[in-house]
Image (cartoon, helix red, strand yellow):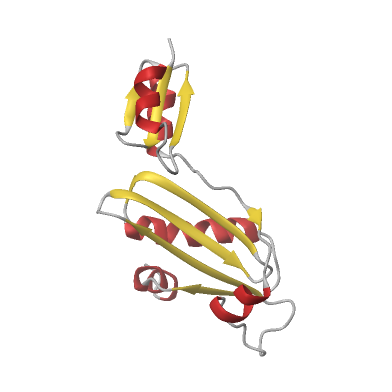
Length: 155
């Protein structure tokens, strides 16, 4: 027997037949679903679907001059500049995180049931995991007072 986990669709949850699951995802923009051999694996997917993977993005002239933050000249070429953000709809509810590095690389992911603070923290954690072992200076930007206080006040 297969179990179909629908993380994003008309109705979310675990379904035991494909036609039942298909009704939830067919024609639904951004549907996220997957089949599993066990109910436990399907449930684990719903709790942590991790939609996004690290990928290189192409920069366009318009994007780099109008919407992207400018990097101060005081940063050296070796300085790693990272921008992080996270959010959720509801508390708890569906949410996601994003990370943008100075070189244009990005990270992103999401969860079906999470909180705003969890996504803000996870963005920073994922960025630092990528940078583990570097000896270059890191400038981390976050709009979360929770994250900033956690780092600067040792919470």
